[in-house]
Length: 135
Image 1 (tube, rainbow, N blue to C red):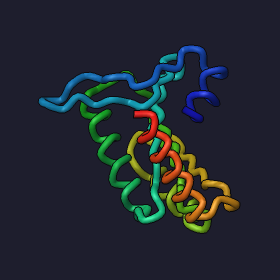
Image 2: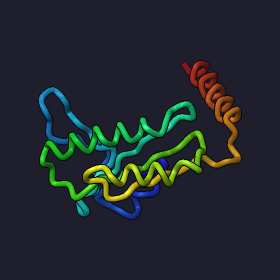
Image 3: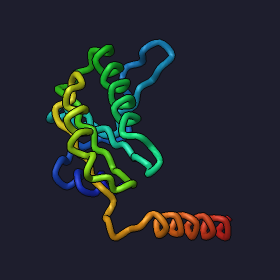
């Protein structure tokens, strides 16, 4: 939602959850598509326990599907939210993502360092309790 809120005022033709041409039984879905620029934006969430390699694997899979379909796409920009705040690894991740076919750039954003893992977990627990009470 935050990414949509940032992009929508800049790109009025921004389309979210754009389904692309099927490949066999697979129906790929781009998180965001900007038709005027022919750019796909893939939003990824990297949890604290996840390895950076997970994101490279996921984006590699996505770029392979988009290329195989022959879609009218000039490129892909992955936007990664690193909930583990591992900023010391971001540059290396960006370099790796940029080497993938059709990736024109990569953006990695760290959760604010003021948010500790404990605060994030307690916030998630509080949200879960609120949802439970609401249902």
